[in-house]
Length: 535
Image (cartoon, rainbow, N blue to C red; front, side, top):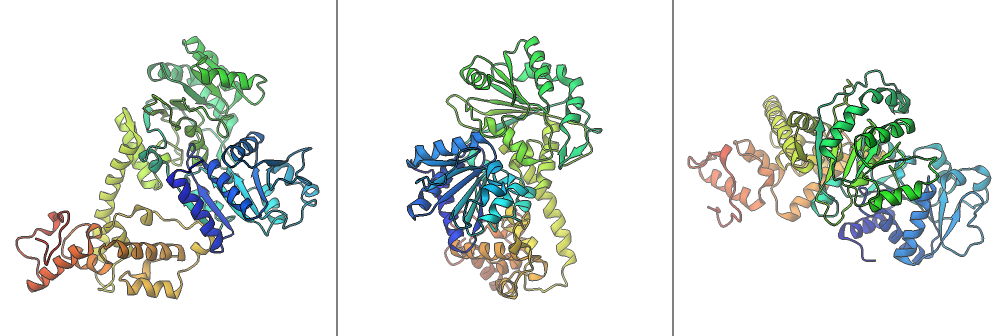
């Protein structure tokens, strides 16, 4: 099977991380972008080198999916380490293992610490728990790859206690833009459900309390679904089994061909098959289908399980992001839960890495009340936030006139080059959180960046990488940015080096004054400007 370009990039990046000494690294791919295919190809490469590979997962369905995908894409067979099944004595070099089985001391004792050369953890956002840690501690010699779809910076920071680096991340926004996932349109429903009395357990809302809070609104929600979900294949996520069953009955009263599935459903496979083939148009479940279930023709998701955990929210919405013939977009219904807890997940959190942009986008969606494309909404919210930041930056720069005159403040540089990834950077891994080295600080100062505001080694590394990339691409230097923006030009960071040099030469030839024919605040370089002065 030929990998997609981003999958090939991911595979290459993983081996580069391992080769550079980062024995534990992460791969982040959105749901529906083929993470299993990527780690199947990584497994194939490891086996070709004579290695033995363990693939860990916390659910039987995920283990079977991994084994099936590896067989289909690489031709490799898998042994199983689960309950009464053991891989010991098998000639297969690949083992799919249940965490619940392998975490037991009696099981681990059967394996030498070096038995596996590589461990791959599916749904790696679960691996912070003791059960996973016991396994990793036993096989401490192994290289480790964690694979997850979580977009949550908070989750990534927690995973930084287990992993040393992020090998590759493919964002939901990029996947949609490049045509590998379906566009998402959100419809905000003006129905406020009161969560003020819902308790918190394990960092998220208590499911029992959520069920009680949701019950009084189920008929109203069903009425709203009649307006928006008619003719769509819809999955509804609810907090409790009895709430899910109750809502199924209400939807049936309203004319939907609704069905419900839960962990105790003996006919689960038949129900899911019937839904996929069109026997039902709404599938209600109590968080059963967040992982390991694929139905590409789902084109509507209703989240009635409010959550603070972005990974969980992304898993729910991810059930409808896969491509399917005739599917134009995924409709996501967003309810205005009434709560003072601002960390509640909304559609904005699927696509915005920055909380400030997400908050603005959520507010814009609420005020709109219309069906809105998430990419367009994120772009508008980003522009609003950038405008606010630039106003704030101007105030900050006025206060910084006594600082080193020849250096650019990192914040000015980031806003000038419009690098939101730098502005929003949060260190996740241990080495990133440490102080920047003397060598890093000296390099930044030599290149024109004031090192005073660079708070950690990770930020310093990202700035130096970006400066090197800009040099290779022929873009402006920090010193050019500071000189020209100091004279009123905007976003000089987006200019070519030669364009900036020509402008500086012209200003110098005019006695270090901007020529009267140029209005700096309104000036935009023409494409392909060059020549002696480029005019």
